[in-house]
Image 1 (cartoon, rainbow, N blue to C red):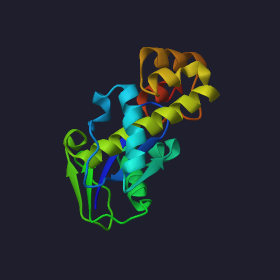
Image 2 (image 1 turned 120 degrees about the vertical axis):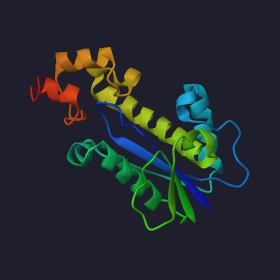
Image 3 (image 1 turned 90 degrees about the horizontal axis):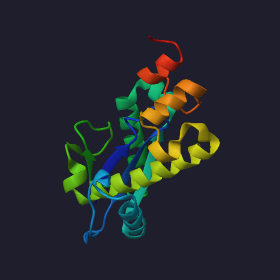
Length: 187
């Protein structure tokens, strides 16, 4: 009963940070890897398999307001903690991708590059990426001028140009330098 945990959305200028915790069965799912190494099509296929075959999975979110208030690292750890707490089964151990762990009442270990080598973390990485991409596609319908469906909130040239042209939306992280600059808070 090992839970793998990963988050997605630390770097974007907009949208929440989202974490997923997954407990896989002993028989792993073929093709698992770091979500960033997989095509969108492959991620979507694996996401479906993970959701069907996992013993348990859950997600946690930290909002844009939380990111701006407590910073992205702490917000990421909060999202991870929420994902772990929401698991319907209590794991014996938690393995987290990265070098920091959330404070929880379970044995927890950070593994740098864990999303490439630990199947449960790979699974969490995939589900988190698919969920956040879906969320950013939904935001794109509300704020089409920013192009969230194409860049998912990351600071691409097109996103920065839209930010300067249309200003800051309610889902932009006001603590991030390009957004602060747009608000006139820094030069």
